[in-house]
Image (cartoon, rainbow, N blue to C red):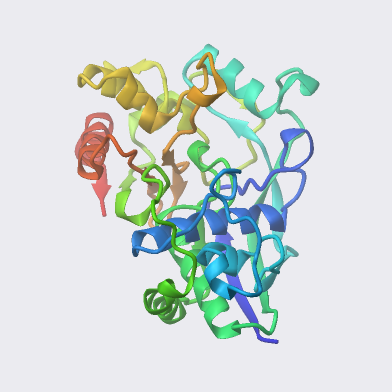
Length: 357
């Protein structure tokens, strides 16, 4: 069996789920679920098929030995499904991983109550005091199961490398968690993984019709930029007196994504919140909800998660805050249209101080 090790450094805390909706520890299953989500999008972006394992109607039902790989999609072949074991084992070595106090900054008292309900919950009276999140360095040990090992490990590396560079790992990416830096060079293995699925995608199950609303690399967008820590916007957020939780000393990230992505105060004549920005630009409620999600719908089938994620601002080696907007454009919106509005919004908030890349 082949062993592969990947060193990671967190730039913002990780969230992988836990008891009472808190992140009590680092859960391997949470990381595996996150990697599968990214892998599905990558496969779809190359014209392959990856089912949605949360959709009972369309997910792969069961591996059929008579049909072999033709009975499951590329994602289920790698990550496992009924009758077929996952092609790898993942173990997290977290001896260098610390715990950081969960906390958030916001400019609006209403946001303080909302964040408390999301992360604290009724059992904790909507408070986050005492909750900690994983933060620091960790090592992933990935072991092949003896079946198609080289292919499997390179596929996984491809997903890890893409998520680290362009997105994030774990859950609650829309709130800024999961920004990581790779300490291991995975470029060559990731390239081999991408090339392999291009060559082998026809080996797996392909339905006659594919859902067009699922995340795909073809509709992926990302905009990263850097901002001076002395920017007045950051000072206003830190001084807004609506802190929830207790920040650690010398924190190198600012948990203020809710205000940037959803809704915040007006600071120096500029309104925080991408939702309000889109409203002012004439976007319809349907378009905005398709991108930013809908949690207050009357029926469950009308609820949707945000397809836009924003990383918490974190201090890089040049002592500038790095921020990343990323996600998947919904079917009714063009990817370039979404990216154009993000860039305009960033320019509006940070003006010439924001350097994009």
